[in-house]
Length: 362
Image (cartoon, rainbow, N blue to C red):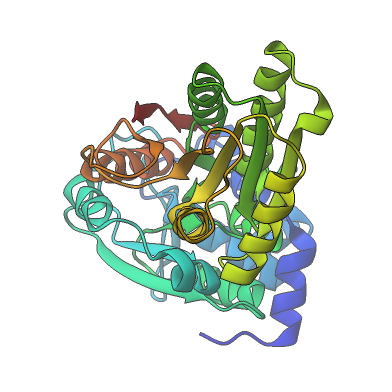
């Protein structure tokens, strides 16, 4: 659905207020002791109550309808529903938002995760939406507006979303889970993320126990909040082992052989102590291993290579140590589904932030 510039500007300026306006409608229903089946205010009446335009009042009523506070129809207008009803866990549609550039580099969610979401929400249709690199915010906003106009209950799963995209989703008040670490200013979105601090703890300890005295930390070129959590833990463990700040080198790199090789050679030539090399992705690790195989160093022991992101349900043999998620993809999908259900059933219950533990494989 396309939105005109006026509607688009209004929704951006309202920010988190739309969520609060829906809360105001619920308080009004309770304070006036309205019963199921009682008529509620018209759009114009709601606008006067909330002190907003009819456009914003209509969106607030749409959100109240998606929360099952009211039921709207063209014939009878808005009718109050039972506020404390025990709701069914049905969500009609789940939008899965994945950044297009992330999909090109590293793929989508594991198939098992999608199956798990469908197991938790058997009646929901799954709609994938690849957010474009240069107009992601407009794309997300259009989907949010579309879902608010639907009579069905919609929910969102966002993978590696930008800060403006997360803000739009937060301001909608719809059920949503961010897969990954939210930006610091995002307070109302529920999140499910791997435990990045534990990942850094496991892999740095592994390298140090095998003699590493210098670390090269190779992250993607588009580092997000979870990466900084990992970096902080790498530095803390290194300090506990007596390493100096100069013993650590940090690089944010694309999965480009020339770029990776240049940084790797610079790091290896800078010292003789045994090196540990952390690669955030398997793509980075493959380039590192190929570079080391084609130009082995004659000085000292070979570097210890570890990988942070290996999304496998079961352990496999790899030429590096790595961490994998302790939950299977289907378990993660079911967990996401339950988090969405919890938000629909209890929209005022606040966000939930949960971490998936890691398992070291070597």
